[in-house]
Length: 196
Image: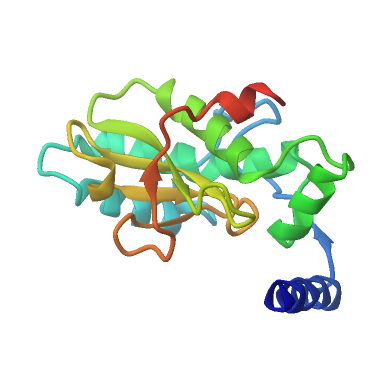
């Protein structure tokens, strides 16, 4: 009990000493409702990250269509920024969670990010990938939910975590097996989302 109180106090000190900052992305390549801009270039400030994620997605299987990998990478990186703007995001993410839980912000918990991102990705015309919702530390105050993408027909454990929550709209990705979170496949991922 004392250990939890110390951790909680440390977290509060960290949050207040780090300063809370509004997050807003200029020109992520999508308009406010998430539709792509026609003039968004592959040679802008996000292109290196997009190409890095594309390469990691292609490494999942020899059967990955490179155009589909680009489409997924471009959409995941840019749409994460659109969501941050829509959620009126505040940094750090745990402070934003506090604001949502207190009713000061409507959306922006990790499962909101996961649902909105996976819905956007599932709407793309592609056949190379499967999308999953992963959950870690279920039934704890540290519960975390994220999108996990795998090559078509492969398990989510062989996939890549796509986590826009972790870095406040700057998409974070890592191999599912290498991540610090102990991911499990979430069996009913939309129950919490339907409550929003």
